[in-house]
Image (cartoon, rainbow, N blue to C red):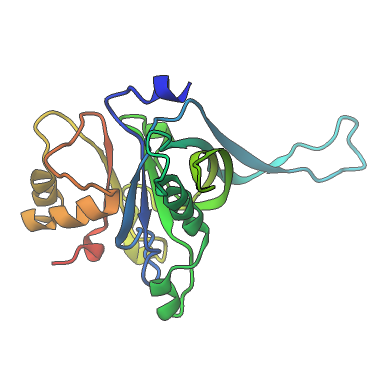
Length: 237
Protein backbone atom coordinates (compact mmCIF):
# COMPACT_ATOMS: atom_id res chain seq x y z
CA UNK A 1 0.00 0.00 0.00
CA UNK A 2 2.71 2.47 0.98
CA UNK A 3 4.99 1.46 -1.90
CA UNK A 4 2.26 2.16 -4.44
CA UNK A 5 1.58 5.59 -2.96
CA UNK A 6 5.27 6.37 -2.93
CA UNK A 7 5.71 6.14 -6.70
CA UNK A 8 4.30 9.62 -7.24
CA UNK A 9 6.74 12.05 -8.81
CA UNK A 10 5.78 14.75 -6.31
CA UNK A 11 6.60 13.88 -2.71
CA UNK A 12 4.69 15.34 0.20
CA UNK A 13 6.72 17.41 2.64
CA UNK A 14 6.33 18.76 6.14
CA UNK A 15 8.22 22.03 6.57
CA UNK A 16 9.09 22.42 10.26
CA UNK A 17 9.64 26.04 11.30
CA UNK A 18 10.55 27.95 14.40
CA UNK A 19 7.48 29.65 15.90
CA UNK A 20 7.18 33.32 14.92
CA UNK A 21 8.90 36.16 16.70
CA UNK A 22 6.59 38.63 18.43
CA UNK A 23 3.03 38.76 17.14
CA UNK A 24 3.81 37.76 13.56
CA UNK A 25 1.38 35.22 12.05
CA UNK A 26 4.11 33.81 9.79
CA UNK A 27 6.33 30.86 10.73
CA UNK A 28 9.91 31.64 11.73
CA UNK A 29 13.12 30.18 10.33
CA UNK A 30 13.05 26.74 8.75
CA UNK A 31 14.29 24.03 11.14
CA UNK A 32 13.91 21.02 8.87
CA UNK A 33 12.19 20.15 5.63
CA UNK A 34 10.82 16.66 6.29
CA UNK A 35 10.26 14.92 2.96
CA UNK A 36 7.96 11.93 3.29
CA UNK A 37 9.67 8.76 2.13
CA UNK A 38 6.34 7.47 0.79
CA UNK A 39 3.37 9.67 0.00
CA UNK A 40 0.40 9.09 2.34
CA UNK A 41 -1.93 6.26 1.38
CA UNK A 42 -4.65 8.30 3.07
CA UNK A 43 -5.18 11.48 5.05
CA UNK A 44 -8.18 12.80 6.92
CA UNK A 45 -9.15 16.47 6.69
CA UNK A 46 -11.97 18.03 8.70
CA UNK A 47 -13.48 21.42 9.43
CA UNK A 48 -16.31 22.50 11.71
CA UNK A 49 -18.56 25.47 12.28
CA UNK A 50 -19.40 26.58 15.83
CA UNK A 51 -23.09 27.14 16.59
CA UNK A 52 -24.74 27.99 19.90
CA UNK A 53 -28.19 26.83 20.92
CA UNK A 54 -30.03 28.82 23.56
CA UNK A 55 -33.20 27.08 24.84
CA UNK A 56 -36.36 29.18 24.70
CA UNK A 57 -39.46 28.31 26.73
CA UNK A 58 -41.94 29.85 24.29
CA UNK A 59 -40.89 27.90 21.18
CA UNK A 60 -42.22 24.49 20.26
CA UNK A 61 -39.42 23.27 17.99
CA UNK A 62 -36.48 24.99 19.69
CA UNK A 63 -34.77 28.31 19.07
CA UNK A 64 -32.74 29.19 16.00
CA UNK A 65 -29.04 28.54 16.71
CA UNK A 66 -26.55 31.41 16.56
CA UNK A 67 -23.49 31.05 14.36
CA UNK A 68 -20.36 31.70 16.46
CA UNK A 69 -17.72 31.29 13.77
CA UNK A 70 -15.68 28.72 11.85
CA UNK A 71 -13.38 26.28 13.64
CA UNK A 72 -9.84 25.78 12.35
CA UNK A 73 -9.13 22.84 10.11
CA UNK A 74 -7.72 19.59 11.44
CA UNK A 75 -5.86 16.95 9.47
CA UNK A 76 -4.41 13.54 10.26
CA UNK A 77 -1.62 12.29 8.02
CA UNK A 78 -0.28 8.75 7.92
CA UNK A 79 3.51 8.72 7.53
CA UNK A 80 5.15 5.42 6.55
CA UNK A 81 8.88 5.04 7.25
CA UNK A 82 11.05 2.13 6.15
CA UNK A 83 14.77 1.34 6.13
CA UNK A 84 14.47 -2.46 6.13
CA UNK A 85 16.94 -2.62 3.24
CA UNK A 86 19.55 -1.38 5.73
CA UNK A 87 18.99 -3.47 8.89
CA UNK A 88 21.69 -1.65 10.85
CA UNK A 89 20.37 1.84 10.07
CA UNK A 90 18.81 4.10 12.71
CA UNK A 91 17.17 6.33 10.07
CA UNK A 92 13.61 5.40 11.06
CA UNK A 93 14.36 6.07 14.73
CA UNK A 94 15.70 9.54 13.90
CA UNK A 95 12.78 10.35 11.60
CA UNK A 96 10.23 9.43 14.26
CA UNK A 97 12.14 11.55 16.78
CA UNK A 98 12.06 14.49 14.34
CA UNK A 99 8.28 14.19 14.10
CA UNK A 100 7.84 13.89 17.86
CA UNK A 101 10.05 16.95 18.36
CA UNK A 102 7.24 18.92 16.70
CA UNK A 103 5.42 18.63 20.03
CA UNK A 104 8.40 19.94 22.03
CA UNK A 105 9.26 23.58 22.77
CA UNK A 106 12.14 24.84 20.60
CA UNK A 107 15.31 26.12 22.27
CA UNK A 108 15.14 29.40 20.34
CA UNK A 109 11.57 30.21 21.42
CA UNK A 110 12.43 29.33 25.01
CA UNK A 111 15.43 31.66 24.92
CA UNK A 112 13.15 34.44 23.62
CA UNK A 113 10.79 33.94 26.63
CA UNK A 114 7.99 32.85 24.31
CA UNK A 115 8.15 29.06 24.50
CA UNK A 116 6.35 27.22 21.74
CA UNK A 117 6.69 24.02 19.71
CA UNK A 118 7.44 24.43 16.00
CA UNK A 119 4.91 25.61 13.42
CA UNK A 120 4.60 23.35 10.40
CA UNK A 121 3.32 23.47 6.82
CA UNK A 122 2.24 20.26 5.10
CA UNK A 123 2.45 20.38 1.30
CA UNK A 124 1.76 17.82 -1.38
CA UNK A 125 2.16 19.28 -4.85
CA UNK A 126 -0.93 21.20 -5.94
CA UNK A 127 -3.19 19.74 -3.23
CA UNK A 128 -3.99 23.23 -1.91
CA UNK A 129 -6.82 22.16 0.43
CA UNK A 130 -4.37 20.24 2.60
CA UNK A 131 -1.85 23.08 2.78
CA UNK A 132 -2.11 25.38 5.78
CA UNK A 133 0.02 26.66 8.65
CA UNK A 134 -0.51 24.43 11.67
CA UNK A 135 0.89 22.96 14.84
CA UNK A 136 1.32 19.25 15.56
CA UNK A 137 -1.03 18.20 18.34
CA UNK A 138 0.05 14.57 18.48
CA UNK A 139 2.32 11.97 16.91
CA UNK A 140 1.56 8.28 17.36
CA UNK A 141 4.23 5.87 16.15
CA UNK A 142 3.73 2.14 15.60
CA UNK A 143 7.02 0.25 15.13
CA UNK A 144 6.38 -2.85 13.02
CA UNK A 145 9.83 -4.21 12.13
CA UNK A 146 13.13 -4.29 13.99
CA UNK A 147 16.75 -4.94 13.07
CA UNK A 148 18.95 -7.56 14.70
CA UNK A 149 20.09 -5.03 17.32
CA UNK A 150 16.51 -4.16 18.27
CA UNK A 151 16.50 -0.81 16.46
CA UNK A 152 13.23 -0.20 14.57
CA UNK A 153 13.58 -0.22 10.78
CA UNK A 154 9.91 0.26 9.90
CA UNK A 155 7.22 2.45 11.45
CA UNK A 156 3.88 4.04 10.71
CA UNK A 157 3.13 7.42 12.31
CA UNK A 158 -0.23 9.13 12.68
CA UNK A 159 0.46 12.87 12.72
CA UNK A 160 -2.37 15.21 13.77
CA UNK A 161 -2.22 18.82 12.55
CA UNK A 162 -4.34 21.75 13.74
CA UNK A 163 -4.60 24.92 11.68
CA UNK A 164 -3.19 28.16 13.07
CA UNK A 165 -5.09 31.37 12.23
CA UNK A 166 -3.64 33.77 9.70
CA UNK A 167 -4.75 36.95 7.99
CA UNK A 168 -6.89 36.92 4.88
CA UNK A 169 -5.62 38.62 1.70
CA UNK A 170 -5.97 42.37 1.70
CA UNK A 171 -6.32 42.71 5.47
CA UNK A 172 -5.06 46.02 6.82
CA UNK A 173 -2.14 45.34 9.21
CA UNK A 174 -2.70 48.69 10.96
CA UNK A 175 -6.19 47.73 12.05
CA UNK A 176 -4.91 45.78 15.02
CA UNK A 177 -5.54 42.42 13.35
CA UNK A 178 -2.94 39.91 12.23
CA UNK A 179 -0.35 41.00 9.70
CA UNK A 180 -1.59 40.85 6.10
CA UNK A 181 -0.40 37.96 3.96
CA UNK A 182 -1.20 36.71 0.50
CA UNK A 183 -1.29 33.30 -1.17
CA UNK A 184 -0.08 33.03 -4.78
CA UNK A 185 -0.71 30.03 -7.02
CA UNK A 186 2.28 29.29 -9.22
CA UNK A 187 1.79 29.52 -12.98
CA UNK A 188 4.15 28.83 -15.89
CA UNK A 189 7.02 31.32 -15.93
CA UNK A 190 6.90 32.17 -12.24
CA UNK A 191 10.16 32.28 -10.29
CA UNK A 192 10.76 33.21 -6.69
CA UNK A 193 12.77 36.20 -7.87
CA UNK A 194 9.98 37.47 -10.13
CA UNK A 195 7.39 37.01 -7.39
CA UNK A 196 9.62 38.85 -4.90
CA UNK A 197 9.99 41.76 -7.35
CA UNK A 198 6.24 41.94 -8.03
CA UNK A 199 5.29 41.69 -4.35
CA UNK A 200 8.03 43.70 -2.63
CA UNK A 201 9.94 45.53 -5.39
CA UNK A 202 13.06 43.63 -4.33
CA UNK A 203 14.11 40.45 -6.16
CA UNK A 204 16.48 39.48 -3.33
CA UNK A 205 13.44 38.93 -1.08
CA UNK A 206 12.97 35.55 -2.80
CA UNK A 207 14.80 34.02 0.17
CA UNK A 208 11.98 35.09 2.50
CA UNK A 209 9.42 33.41 0.25
CA UNK A 210 11.54 30.25 0.09
CA UNK A 211 11.94 30.18 3.89
CA UNK A 212 8.22 30.72 4.52
CA UNK A 213 7.36 27.77 2.29
CA UNK A 214 10.17 25.36 3.16
CA UNK A 215 11.63 25.46 -0.36
CA UNK A 216 15.14 24.00 -0.67
CA UNK A 217 15.47 24.28 -4.45
CA UNK A 218 14.12 27.62 -5.74
CA UNK A 219 14.64 26.50 -9.34
CA UNK A 220 11.89 23.89 -9.04
CA UNK A 221 8.44 25.43 -8.72
CA UNK A 222 5.57 23.14 -9.68
CA UNK A 223 2.65 24.80 -11.48
CA UNK A 224 -0.42 24.93 -9.26
CA UNK A 225 1.53 25.12 -6.01
CA UNK A 226 0.19 27.65 -3.51
CA UNK A 227 2.91 29.87 -2.04
CA UNK A 228 2.50 31.87 1.15
CA UNK A 229 3.86 35.39 0.55
CA UNK A 230 5.01 36.99 3.82
CA UNK A 231 3.76 40.46 4.71
CA UNK A 232 5.97 43.33 3.57
CA UNK A 233 7.01 44.22 7.12
CA UNK A 234 8.17 40.65 7.68
CA UNK A 235 10.60 40.64 4.76
CA UNK A 236 14.26 41.01 5.73
CA UNK A 237 15.79 43.65 3.46
